[in-house]
Length: 331
Image (cartoon, rainbow, N blue to C red):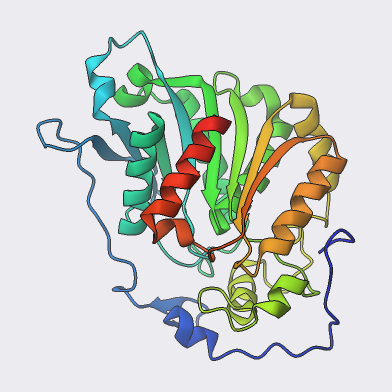
């Protein structure tokens, strides 16, 4: 990925079982995917304040023609405050799924965002975006950016009454963390175009990056049960623009104009948090990204844990609690 990460010889073969079977997908002749609809169960929004729940949620359309939308999570406690006082920080969240799976309605992310809104006492806007390969990158980045402009301009009741748009954080998990990086660079470049929406920081939760040359952690964890390198390679093959390799700037942050745009993050004073764990094959790329930002003078902090695996915070409540404590301190 970069000269800051230890690389394994490119001649080393990476052997993995069939990644299509691992992901439960079939590639169709027209380039679309057939996905196992039962792989990721969905949960409906719960907007009714009469329900005995701690966090309310509702779905709002962003772009009808692209079928993009967002799920807003509001801590019930906010309803007890006056509409003009004590507004809550805003987290704009982009879900994981390797760019090809899941939605903001996936139960795994509904539960995560609901718990995050409750623990941090924030409003969370979880953005649903178009998936690859039917819509290859940069479609997801475009949708993510459109969501920010929608938030800035919307008259949606919950956001208008309870969200502090001057205290906004962009957060994403895995592929969503990759989106936060690229959307953050775009937003930094746009600057005043977002005006009322004041981004204070970026949170990259186990972000998904790659490169044509494998790093040490990918070779060490070649048989990882969650995200082996062969699966990562297929995800990038399906998500990147047709004909692009792993050193495309969407995949490899050291490529393209990304390094130059980091200067803009530095000038804006945005803070960045990168999280990860030693059991994730992507850990060396995440550490390399932090070092790259540090060299550019970006206000970056990290939370790298010794144990765990990719996406561990979605499956182990104690790990999620520990993450929320880190996020609370960062925000």
